[in-house]
Length: 156
Image (tube, rainbow, N blue to C red; front, side):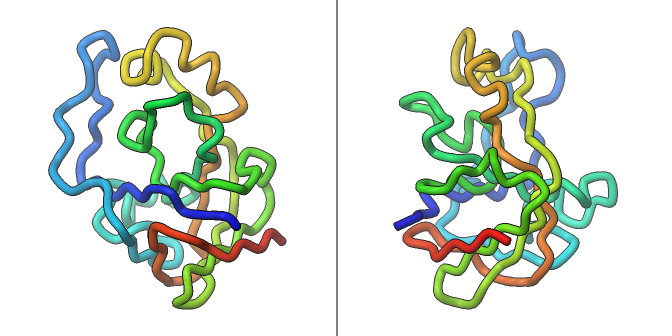
């Protein structure tokens, strides 16, 4: 069964400046057990919530099998780590996730292409290994809650 492995809602943008200088320190509590989404706005408490410039990329989803061993959402700055779903094949689709509180609909708009920061946070060559496997940038179409754990998945 598909599973939400991790969730990240960070109030700060940690990848600023040059990758060789390293990311800003992580705020406490950015990996969470659940997130609340608002249609058209994103994840409540996340750095991109309600920002017009990020309307089509307010929620990012990545497949667990895309990440190398030891890497997690804090390294790639995506919001949802999903196991058992071919995330990178979903561009143009609607991804529906239901953790038991009702379905959350996400419009998968475009790939979340890896950047040079991946080599700094995961290790040399990570950017190349994540090419075409960096996840998807989505717009939430409905309000709802996502939780770590088993999830029902529908793709339309």
